[in-house]
Image (tube, rainbow, N blue to C red):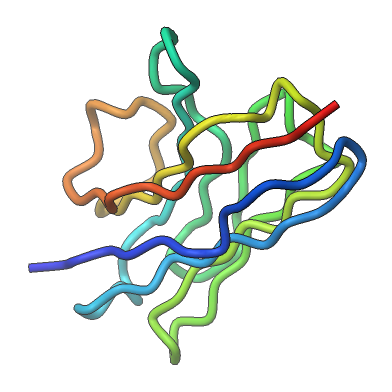
Length: 121
């Protein structure tokens, strides 16, 4: 069983940066880890995913070049560095885990509770 806990959200001005963390209670070293987000009134959408080895990463087009996903398996932690934040990045950000890479939320087995990110204009 894997439990995921996100942290690092908050309020930031447009153009600013935040780093989200996702700490896992179980061993996630063989899991692909992803970040999704959900804004009010919208469906949950894919943000980024990283393979268990860290060797492969994929990003949604709307965050490519601004966000970076990384992981430290020894710490059972995944990060999302978010730079050049825009008001449209405002959402609850969730981390998720599964055995292999995927960009569809329904494919993920384990989820955290989410952390709120608010970007003011």
